[in-house]
Amino acid sequence: MSTDLDTAAVEDWLTAHMPGFSGPLTATPITGGQSNPTYRLDTPSGAYVLRRKPPGVLLKSAHAVDREFRVQQALAGTEVPVARMHVLCEDDSVIGSAFYVMEAVAGRTFDDPAMPGLAPDERSAMIGAMNGVLAAIHEVDIDAAGLSDFGPTGNYYARQLDRWTKQYRASQTEDLPDMDALIDWLGANMPPDDGQRRLVHGDYRLDNLLFAPDRPEIAAVLDWELSTLGHPYADLAGVIMQWSMPHTREGRGLAGVNRAALGLWEDQRFIDEYCARRDLPGIENFEFYLAFCHFRMAAILQGVKKRALDGNASDPERGLQLGAYVPQFAARGLDVTNA
Image (tube, rainbow, N blue to C red; front, side, top):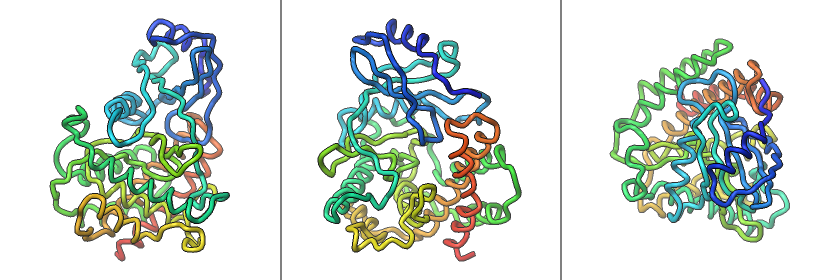
């Protein structure tokens, strides 16, 4: 199904609901993402970004643009850099699905985690900024930010395992014994709840960060679709998991890269610096969190693949390319467990 944007309908709605907005507007799709279709809006009153739910039949609780809007609005004024939120439209009749509009933040993104074109000290500073903002997300006072009800209470990993297993089964297109075994292992090796109930991003990686145009600082953290209240080590392990992937366009990892020569941090340094920022003594049983992240990414990419096959993906060709990694994530997750 087409994801073309009805710009006339958007313009009419924003004119009526967004203070300071003035048309006409032109919309340019921002490609590459596989979650919520995203567009840059250029208007006489300024540049904005619109994110909407995809059209078509969606998995339950997926593509919650209202949650994206709420969490970024709540983080305004905290140490976590986010774009300014303007308006949220929950009326599906306007363009066929809910959407929100935020400011267009100037900055740089890096699809390649090796960050070509930068000097080693610049790369190191970029990773340091990435580490610092991750710790800042996990230190947000959820009560002061009005986010104490942003996620359920109880064991985060137990509910995430249940949620993503259901999502995976709902979008499954083939039998994968490694995925079945990984799901079983995670259920049997669930760590006890240690009481850390924090804001978690859910998909924290380099290409979801917008860096300032001229310095190694993060201008905005993007793509909050999977954010919730939960356990912070899932975000941390997610960074380490991503780096273990192949250094390709689809893999977006650092496997085989000489990190020291490029100024990129090794895994343990990233973990140690994070723990120091949060005054933590260290992390036990890190393999569970790493295996969990492999499982969740496999489930996410299975959904991407299914949407591409059904014609609902924002970039179907890339969706199929990413979907091909599902067996690899499942196998790597099982390898982490030594099961």
